[in-house]
Every structure is written in C-alpha cells, then in structure tokens.
Length: 203
Ligand SMILES: [Fe+2]
Image 1 (cartoon, rainbow, N blue to C red):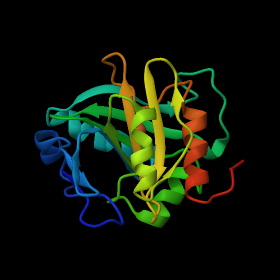
Image 2 (cartoon, helix red, strand yellow; image 1 turned 90 degrees about the vertical axis):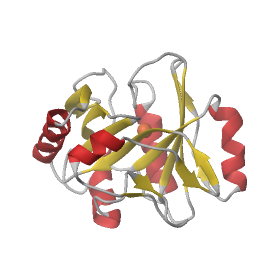
Image 3 (cartoon, rainbow, N blue to C red; image 1 turned 30 degrees about the horizontal axis):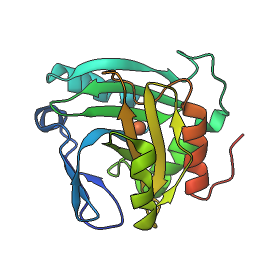
Image 4 (cartoon, rainbow, N blue to C red; image 1 turned 180 degrees about the horizontal axis):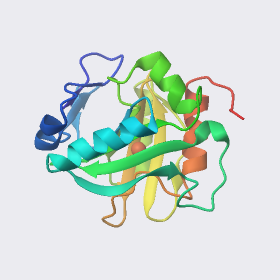
C-alpha cells in the first residue's frame, strides 16, 4: 500500500479505500532495509474529506479507533500554535494504522504539506522500533536530520527528515494503544516538523 520507490519520498500505491483496508500497511523498504510500519498519515483537503474517507474505510471493514476530531484541541488541554493543529481520525487496517488528516486552517502545516507534496505522499510514515533513542543514530548516519526525541512514558517518538524533506517517524510503544499522537508529545513533534522542513514556527 505504501512504497518508497526511490530515496526521495514514500507513496501510497492506491486511493481505493477497499484495497487500503484489505492490504493494510506493509513493511517498507527504506535505505535497503525492510522496516515494520506502525502507521502512516495521509493528508486530504478538508475536514469533510476526512469524514468521507474514514466512512469509506469503515464501510469496507476498517476499524475506527480515533476521532475524527480537531487535534489537540478536542481531546487535550495542550495549547499549540494554530499552525500545528490538525483535523484527524485513525482507522486500523489489516496491518497498521492509517491516520487521515486535513489542514485545520488554510496554509497551516498540513496545508503546506499538501501544496508541496500532494495527497499521494504520506505526511509521514512511522516505523516501529523497540527503542527510539537507540535507533535514531543509524538514521542520522544515513543522512536523515533527526528532531528531538519525545517520550510521554507510553509513546516514544521522533520525527526525522530525509535530505529531500520526507518525514519518517520512529515510534516505540510501551502499551498496546492506537495512539499516533499524544497530548504530551504533539507540540514538540509538530514543531520539529517545521524545523526539519526549514519552516519558521507558525502563528
Ligand atoms: Fe505519526
């Protein structure tokens, strides 16, 4: 369902919700190694399109595990700049979680992703590792820029960027949740994305 045909970016191979549910997320070859995908995040144009895509996935057998809602506002006390807010919901596929997200306001962080990369390129792909801190240096050695590691005690996460700007996340889980963001991690993780992509912090 997602492939990395070259070093420049990761791509969804289909936009058919039925095929997405059936095939799920598979191991992804990056840097000559197959990595286990925990989740991928796609970006669509609007909150209405998030609703439509999630309903299509659920109608075809996907399991809704989160949202859709405005994150973090609807579920956290956490305050983040408007630039970093996102409309999102998460569906469990045959293998892995698919986050369907959309910009919360025009020109915000997810809006820039859409404008620059288009909807066929995941906002990011998250690869499961047992220990984020231990795993990150190998990516730095491979040319990825590595953001700050965040760990709320349950989720360990770090955003990294390929030389071309594709975001790859490393994630570790100490309990079997479906969370892909957390109230404690979202501010640092989203701010890291702007830094990795060379964007000044938004308003
Ligand atoms: Fe993620």
